[in-house]
View 1: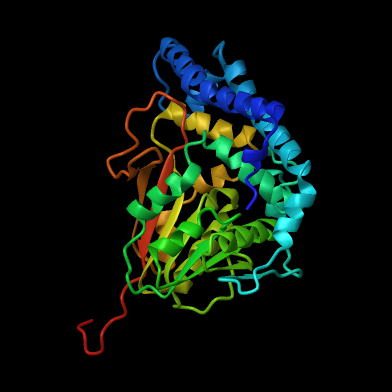
View 2: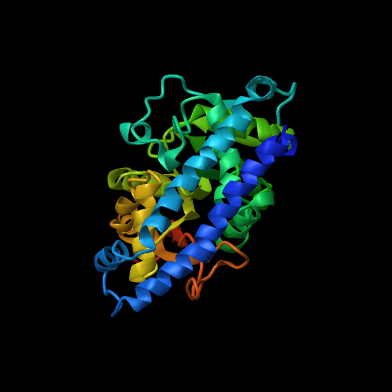
Length: 365
């Protein structure tokens, strides 16, 4: 597969490096300076709303706010231009199909995309992720910079798989809801070599790219265009249902329906694992997370943080539901908390739950 970054011109490389380093300095220099201004402003606020009000009055806040929005828009401009200038070559790559594919791709041209999915340019990506085949390449390219080049080689997703997903040597089916362009799905093949691995997403462009990259790597993944709220898969057929950074892009009712569908899919003893975000309990940091959602065109962060997903899991018949903090740098799941980090970072967390084992005949009630 063509790696666009290996083919960048000097001007393109310079633009990418500028955006990447601007993002890094925003996180590790501007944000700590903002927290010092906040600390000097008086008694720390007790609530997120109060912290937000103080935050917006700080002298450095306009720069902090402006830099976050602007560098994101710059990111898509750089990524879009790099991809679209290579459209013909990339389109040909998507269209090439191995004579004997390891996996499969099933698209549904009649699938009706929900309004809450199409009405926003999520992440400020022009046209969103679903509008054009090249949008998947743009998002894949941009995701590297968003993660500060710290997820190259799937380090982030390997940590999730190694520390959050259970070992199931005899697993027969694993489903990844909201699989995007497949970076969260492909590592599942190595974790569950006996299982059919299925990736489901609303966006056909992402699925085409996911399928092409899985085939290029010789990985057997079955990609299907569908809605994670109603996958069409058989009830009780899955050992693990997972999702990575998908629930925060849904309204509250869609989150509930997705959890319910995941529970329906699981076998007795099966595991639900969603990698998402949660509030940290630090009013200032949490206020900046809410502000990030506003500046990044992600209107449903409030729906995620305002929903009790542990209760939703229980309502869906799952047990042992809990959130665990997740450190994306080296440790993965970290039940003791996020730790003391000076730089701005996403408050990653893993939602875990289990489908109860079926009662044995004759067992005591």
